Length: 64
Image (cartoon, helix red, strand yellow):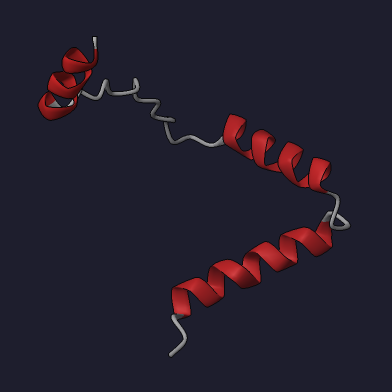
């Protein structure tokens, strides 16, 4: 079963590649330029700290 949204994204990506001669540097530059002129704000979240697992802490303390 083909997903129409996935197919549309793949078609757009393929057309984008052909338009820029399948040059990865040109594709990335075009995407970056689009991000600069896009009116939608970009969200950058801070990385979350992962709390150490209590069991692993106990095992580590036993090894000392």
